[in-house]
Length: 92
View (cartoon, rainbow, N blue to C red):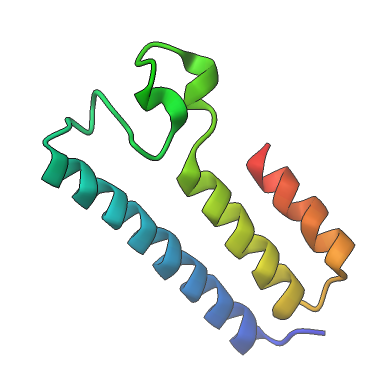
């Protein structure tokens, strides 16, 4: 059973990690001179700008789901199977 302090710490870490990943992606786009409104290098949509299917695959979402699964497994002491199921549900 998890108490409030580790859950708060894990949530704060999750927010910081995903925020840093997003900041790095925006920084790379800025350095490369790509418009953030037109392109998102974190998704496969960068290869075909108008394709909605490719836009659904986003690196930032995959990293967030991975960190979420680890947070559930380590902090909330869920089983590995349950953590993987919730991480997949996060992606969907």
